[in-house]
Image 1: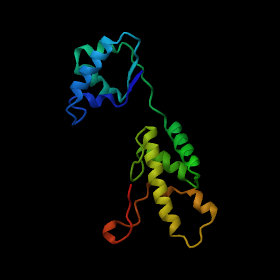
Image 2: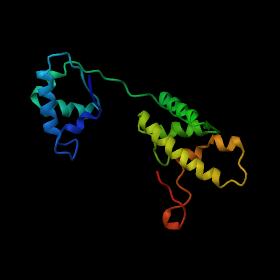
Image 3: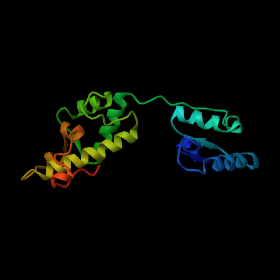
Length: 171
């Protein structure tokens, strides 16, 4: 089995990588010459992967089956976010869950999620950094304060910028 993630990057417009056409040609050769069963899964974003299949006339015929997965709902992404936070030892406090939901809907000052679990991971990383900055400023934080993710941790801007002489935001 061969799994190609972000397969659209093999197309001329999908990447600045000039090896895409050669990789597609080699993939086609491998698929034609293989005497054993070979399963090739090309994964990616629907619109971009359609461009991949159009990039080479022989490619579309080699992928007779397309499996499309629906986008996650806001409720599912909030649950994914909450699960990731819990795995990191964090608990959503106050209106943090609603702030995540607003971020998903694009109603927050800074939309942080893009309808993908990977965006949840990015948001958790950002929220953890902001939460750590907030907790470090507390004189004697309690264990509850250390574990709490507040709404301001979800979408807040850094409290200072590198130009102001602080530590700045690294995410």
